[in-house]
Length: 111
Image (cartoon, rainbow, N blue to C red; front, side, top):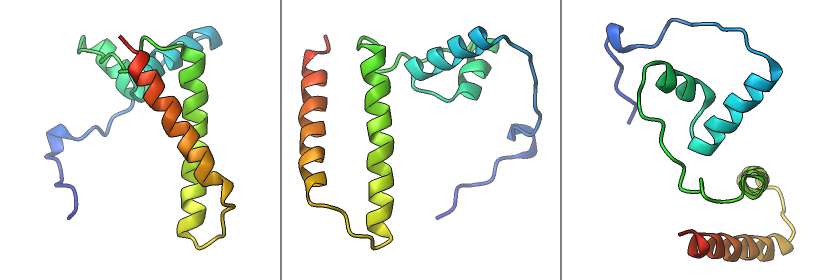
């Protein structure tokens, strides 16, 4: 089932551009990542004074969260390879189990 089409007045068809410094961009990216949303959503919410959600992992170490996101990306690539019929070494099941245990521990430690 396809997503219903939005009315013309609800479609986001216009673009707003702004120049920022590299450090400002890095900060914006970091804040969007912490909130768990895309940069465009983060900027829109901040500009329009909407609520920017707190990520469930906002109390965690940002470097750890970033590394886990990278690992998740690799896991997605492995899943795509499997779906394409490529052979994947057996040790990836063990890696997945270790990641699951790590995630469970992080969630248990989160106040």
